[in-house]
Length: 316
Image (cartoon, rainbow, N blue to C red):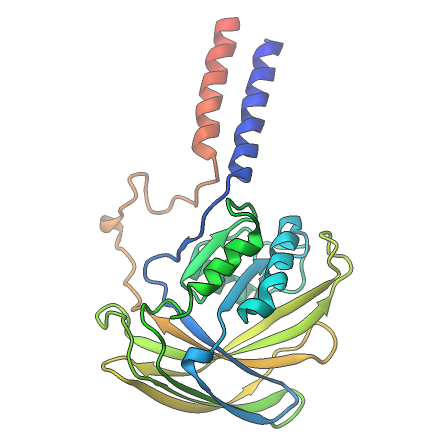
């Protein structure tokens, strides 16, 4: 009896540790998730204007992280090490849903990240909304090598063709908490299917340069490039080449966690059409559409429990 219990415990621990340590290669983001690009920015307390060629925009890395996540430290250090060489621009999204140990995220931003990429557990890195890597284990010589390859593959920002056009961005700070964001985009050609991608939206991503949280159990203390809010500025209907649009919006900035180091960033995002929810009779899940998300390795654990029960039964 005792030997059987020991065998079951060893098998369960082995299965869980194996699931955590496997190196997951980078993959394309889920079908229907539109790529994003941009990165022009200004300090929130400074009024300024800039125009950039689209081909000169930096790779955009969305980094899903948390102040308790020790593996996230390896990811963030690796990205920091390649930031200058790749001209990478980082945006850190902190987990907030059912979260008691990290005050740097928000429910809205966490929900957006999950809705787009289907991930609830950090770490994870997404390049230009098109290529994503889950976890901190790599088959490459180093995480730096893998992230560098991901960043370099984004020279067309996931659009399948070199970017040709310009982006204009201006920020007029009107108070400590408000300002007017103006933008204009001309994208001369793209490779997206107009039948599956209907709009392109402009957003202001408000970023805190560094937030201090000494209680974070992963030991970083200072957490960089924390996204505090995402505000829609306007939308362009995609019906032909080139894509041309502009807009201007007065926005209220979200509060910084600490300090006075907010900046405003212009990000463009392609949006796939929203599908209508399935009716009950159209449910495609054999067990039923109301079933909750599966737990990692649950099927394996269930199988082990069956084997264990059989072993106990034979011992009895």
